[in-house]
Length: 282
Image (tube, rainbow, N blue to C red; front, side, top):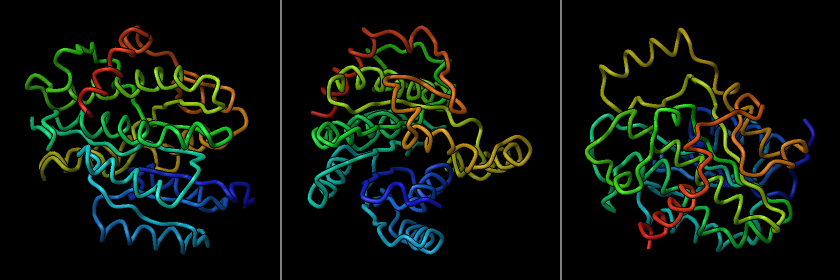
């Protein structure tokens, strides 16, 4: 495989399994310097070892942090900044769905905290590096689940007692709105931001909600889900292809530009979400 990513620095969250791990392997095989973000030291160190062995690339390292916590997300950004003076590609991919309503350490509904605020805090904490790196890219994982959301900025951060796929849909709409406003703010810098839907993928997603739910999720995945490698294709394409470099602020599925809901195309809502996120992370 061509080592066309030699000299480029990639930061990938949610890279210890599923589509994040599949994308990380592809980047490593092509020679990228790879920094992974993980929450569990044991699991993350095992994945780093596996990726090094599978790719023959030793330029893979780990930053530990719980991205549902704003302070730890900032600490990850600070640790990255302490070692690197460029960021060619940031892949925001960490995420989960929580069926039980709970708040994060910062008092934010947990799904929104992990699936949106982590993207926002990590990206904005590294925005100067992104802007100064030639042709940098930010790629964020969203979902067609955004279509169920009619986001209310007054209640979305606390979830209004809502959990499960209602909160998940809000967070995935937030990913698209965040990408849209980020792209506007990157105009003129040479950097771009896009997001994508990976499809229904056979991963560890949603297995954190108890053994009974896990049984049904695994059974459905065995029958209907695509492989992590297939789900990762659009991430890899957005992060590395010449064709994708011409897009900014868009949403993709299977490497094709894909229509979103009217809520996801609402620039005032995108701006309002950005301002809310600034307040929540202040």
